[in-house]
Image (tube, rainbow over the protein chains, first blue to last red):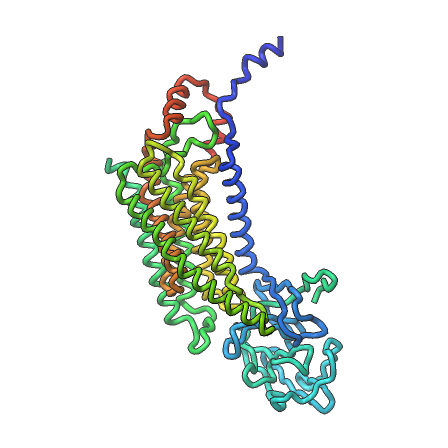
Length: 193
Length: 314
């Protein structure tokens, strides 16, 4: 009896689902569009993936490494690896390490291959080899970092265009894209920075 | 008739006001909120703060307008998702047709510009690779892909105009909007690729927002012919597309980008012109199948759960 009631109250299917190729295609395009929009917004405001070009950060980063760069609300700190675009030098971005932030004094002694910040020698285990005087001369090697700026250098000190190079110089913090937080690719090099 | 026309007039007037205001503020920002030689932004500049506020006000006010948009649900059809099929029907509406043609030909005109730029970059890339001096960057593939997609968008937009103008014969013109949505995907990737190394967000975020708004509008437009009909959101996205496109246009982007922006602005204006009318007064046209379906439906049993499922999309 119950079964009979069930049959009476169950309405006939009024609608049928559109399963045409066009409908399936629409669903795929819609998914693509929404995912792409979200990804682009995230990769604009929150993080970016940037590929290292050059050897200036060896041995920390290799040419061709893909890095995840954190952009949202970043304030530069000494020792961070940052991505900057110095428009006075070139429109492509540079990957360097922050040596000093605003108000700090930087002194570079090429004889002992030592960098002093506010009079204290930095323990730099990350550099590739001992510093030599660059081919453009000593460049900027005694400076107090102005307000809103940072002093950056590559870990491969002898093959790095960085704040010592007069055409680049001290970097305005507004030129910072973000902080490199990890290497994503190649997988064998995946590591936190 | 005036009562029915009222809401599309509200949409057009308010969207126009917001578009002009935001464009004006953007010009003010460009004149005062960036430092001399290298164009770095001045932190907390008045114009930048005002521009953010005006954009938010535009989004919110268009949202309020969308929420108050009168919507008369069209009769159900046997195939789920085709209820809003004729929402862009515009029989004999020359203004809608003209706007869609402007949109289509704007898209078509951008093809040689985008393809030319992409081809030049591809040649430079090939040269750099052969000289082993390639250090990464844009190789032009995305520009050329966007050009091809813009060509497809031309056909899609033209087809929307044609099928809406002669909706008595076929009623699924909206589905073709998926083509310009695909163009938006290529365009968005190309735009992002070109500005990935730019630390000044204000240089490119207005353009990114315009492309995203346009892309979402087109996909919602296409959804009107499928199960994803959300007419109020479509209207809101059309308004936002016009506002964001105007902000991006006053920054004088390159010609190909300008033409694509004009194209999506014209399409959004066409939507704002026609959709409110059809939502207030659903057109009684469509294919022979739909007309037959409507007659059958008059005798059908009401199914509350399914009604709710469809109406939630409103």
